[in-house]
Length: 512
Image 1 (tube, helix red, strand yellow):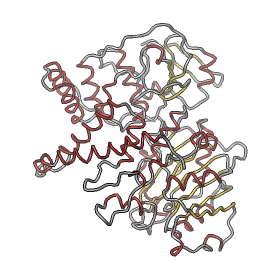
Image 2 (cartoon, one colour):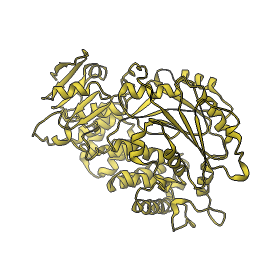
Image 3 (cartoon, rainbow, N blue to C red):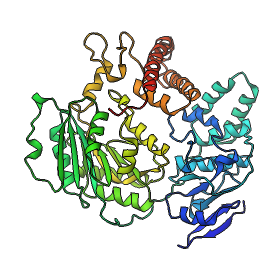
Image 4 (tube, rainbow, N blue to C red):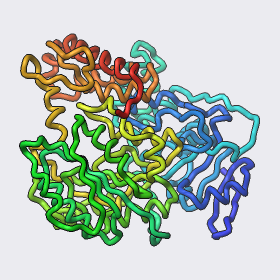
């Protein structure tokens, strides 16, 4: 492919095909993106929906987003796109082993965002053209894509879902299996050099906690030692009155405003929302109560946001071996990660244990959706809601935390009741007016709610098939027969989970 060159005012070379607006491209080159296109108007929006057979609902970017002028999208039009020359060379351009150049471009964009820490962006109006392409991907190319990118299990699952009685599917499956292998060690872009902080942005740090005052005090000490100071720490503490020491947080003076709110409501989502209302900083950092952070933690959050010119990032969460470990252990774990640590790009998730968001965008979402209280998935929902606003949430490997995960305390104390059946069970918020009785819903109804909320009805169905496929075949061979006979009961559990998810979805997003 012969690509033209455009040199920006900073001397960077941008390669392109088609006729982009070069003035707009100059502006884009100064931002977070690495690849740009306007493919939504050119027939590529939601192209290659067969990706669902691998991603199901586990991939934020499976669907292209609506009503946005700029957003992350890996669906590149090979006839109208632009890319940083350094990125094109690092990622080795299009894979010409595919017969179809459209799939070459889709494979390039997909691997860029999912594996190579590059950021492909749809930009409305960058390429003005009235041409709409018809996307035609052969069965063979489809299986080659799956074979080259995923484990063989995903090709088998696609074969099952497409129709195992169809000879065309079998023929393409065996063709791809015989002639291609899964590509390992995908090239990865190196992070940009972090710039020094411009101006004096203020930072609020939120800590929701429950029955972990000792861990919270430890985190306050880490926050007091930051190279870039936080201006405010907001603690929302749900520790019951008979178990808490109300003077504990006030026994020491800290170099930041310390705001203490004793939580009277229930749930970590409500706790964060109550804290957000009290925040005064330009940025909000979300943290769990059971983490340890190094002295450059806050500084690196602000530096990476300013360097990439984005408004949200998700930090590196490192699991401790035990709750006695400290920052020395964190350093050892980071060294063991080696080069694998250094991936920025579009984040594949979002964690309330370690994330930083510009306050105006937190307020645009109001806060966490309290439909997730009593369960899981609220942080992923918050991250996906940000990208649906058109924000780029990047992964930040420079701000790492050590997650101690003590066995007691925390908001999961309430959520653990979900595993209990019978009279001892305490009703969870997501049960609404229909308490759980003899059948415990699985997966977690709040996880299912997130899926129903963000994905299409057909993708929810594909998630169900994937859920049962993994349940049946991913366990031990000895237990296969037992799992097979449990399928009817598992189906009842799944239906019950979907029942609660649909009820939550009908209520709509709630914040109080």
